[in-house]
Image 1 (spheres, rainbow, N blue to C red):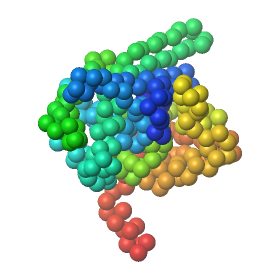
Image 2: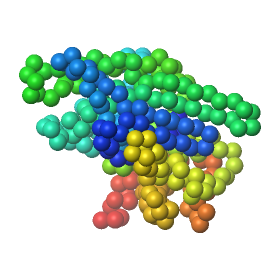
Image 3: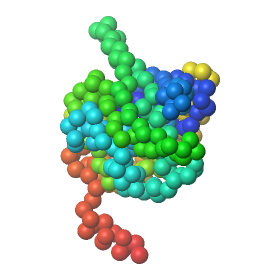
Length: 286
């Protein structure tokens, strides 16, 4: 579901408490939540958003699968992952560690409502869940110091069970190339999900693409999270898709006037080129 209906792309004010997105017959609602402070007060957290929230979910879901447990230790591995994604592990109020911690808190506090429907069969299914059931955090003794990494995170049982059944394989090394763009990450996830499930070529309209990657609705303000003009979305999406195709030259997707055309992909379509060929191309460019 999260590979098809993503989180918000941009930061929202703390007053914005609900985000809705849709794709085809699937719907997603994300509600911002609250976390307990060392003073015994519940503090409002913002909606999770952007590249960092997506990268955190990628890492934590991967660790849950690797450790084969809904409860995972994350303190050391998370810092290493941040460095692997190309972010400096610098502290301070405006440092990357602080930014990732804020997104971790937002994810730990949020709630999700996931829905699917079948108009022909008259059947619907709604699931209320949260990514995490609990998060244990040790705070520093001095109030002016920043929060430490959470020592453990426990996925909700329903989220974890669904993850073990339907996890989408992701090339972590490839994500490094897209870590600066949440939309590129979403497009990459989606291509991985769709391309391996196709039995014949499929055309996807600009309208459907914009509904999935260009919009999203914030309930409090009533604004959308994407582009208002279709041509602006088309230009941006085409540029981002071109970058993904540069990283994965075997990906069978083409842009046309009506949208894109995606063909069934071989298992190596979303695999990175061999290191030797990459070095050769770099030498040629030089």
